[in-house]
Image (cartoon, rainbow, N blue to C red; front, side, top):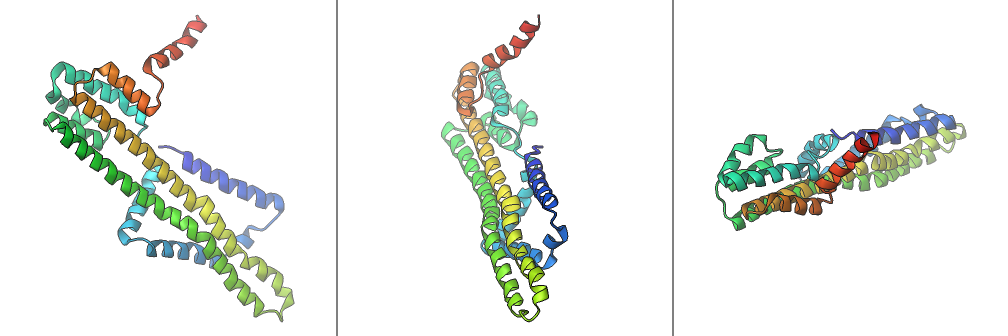
Length: 265
């Protein structure tokens, strides 16, 4: 699990609480149910209205993945692919069927099965590319859904403030109550900006980043499997995948890890 989202949101709200405390403001003045219900409820409502019901369900389901983070980094799949290349070179593509149960993810498992079944290179590329496009499309839908909530929330907050100020104007004959009423009116704008920048936009941004990481990982798997099918040498495959992912070459990593040990001697 990647705790970045939880850490970031807690830090953001913690800074807000610190400011309120240092300013000597009242939490009760900000936690007013009416504007909160309007902003949060209406934002979600117009978000649903601007998408299909299927998009909404898909976006809600993506929240678990958003909290957990990516399944793995693109670099983590490279040792698996190099191992498959070594096995295929020594025992043939059919031997890759033995690796299905230990595959790191469903996409890799499907590609391994296709290789073991003797799928044509062109057909294999088509199948994997289609899977990558479909997954990327689903991830973009979820990210756009929450991004749209982040766009609607501030405007809905302004709507809530206007509605409250209209009520304030009806009470001009009660000057003693105008101050608290005006302050309460701006709580809707606060929650519109707060929910957009502390909740919806971070969720959208994180889902977009997870989508990019998963697409990169699937692309590495696709290129690796095609190279294995073509009979690429394991060490050449490793160098190519490391270059594609921006990972440090294994030899350099080993050398770097060995330096502190040598220095300790």
